[in-house]
Amino acid sequence: MAEVRKRVIEDKYNTGKIKKSMNEKNNKNTPKKNKNSVSKKKQSTEKKNLLVRFRIFCNGVKSEFLKVHWPSKGDMIKYSIATIIFIVFCSGFFFVIDIIFAFIQSLFS
Image (cartoon, rainbow, N blue to C red; front, side, top):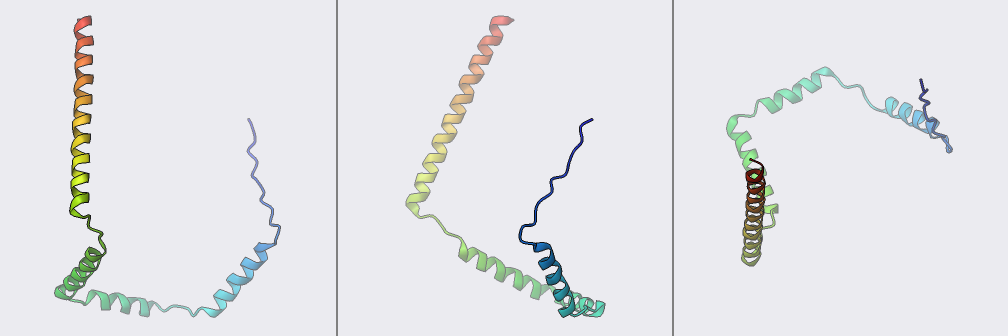
């Protein structure tokens, strides 16, 4: 059987030591989180009543709705015509293919 060798990537700039030292510094500076603080945050979000959550949802929908770029009337007409032409082309193509296959099938039966 053939052996699979792992490719060893050279660390030209010795970044391994830098990453280790950065991780050690970050671990020293970050305070440990309490389980109680996390549970209090969950409780505060769960306590909001249905109407408040619905209002927040509606405000989000409204802000996203305002970001939508609506096409002009001329663009809408162009897109509609292009769509209709594409549908007619595809239906004609499949109609012709169906006729050809039906003809081939009638030759062999």
